[in-house]
Structures are given as structure tokens and as C-alpha cells.
Amino acid sequence: MPAPASQEGAPPEPFGAANTHADLPRSFVELVTPVRSGSTAGLPPDARIVPLQAPPEKLDLVKSRIEVTSAQLEG
Image: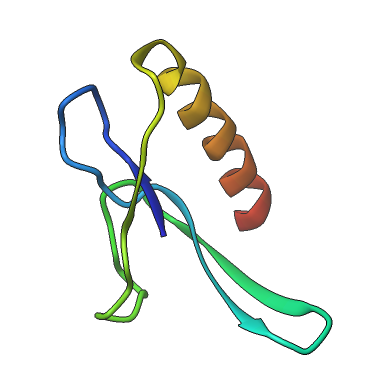
């Protein structure tokens, strides 16, 4: 699950969407679920949080794009 820091220097926190995938011989299947900011409710306890890094000047843009995509998933 990608997780950006809420601000520069802060620890990463769950945000946007969590995903996993199953590899097939010539393709894959991806499962995605929206995640509320800072919450791991509904996720397996062994979910791996992957720090998502962006330059400080791009962090707000990255977060806003993740919010748009997550809202579409949730809808």
C-alpha cells in the first residue's frame, strides 16, 4: 500500500488505495480498495506499507491525484 508522508519529514501513513495482485503466465489480476487517510481498517494485519516519496514541491500534487483516484474507486 503506497503511503506518502503528510508533510516533509513526517512518517508515511496509509492514504488513497491499497492494492495487491496475482501474477498469471501472461497477465495479472489487481485488487484495489480505497483507504481512509491514516486508517488501516479492513486491511490484513500483514499489509505492507510502502513509503511513497515525492519532492516536497510535488507532494501536494501527488496527494491530490491520489485523492481523485481513490474517490473514483470508492464511488
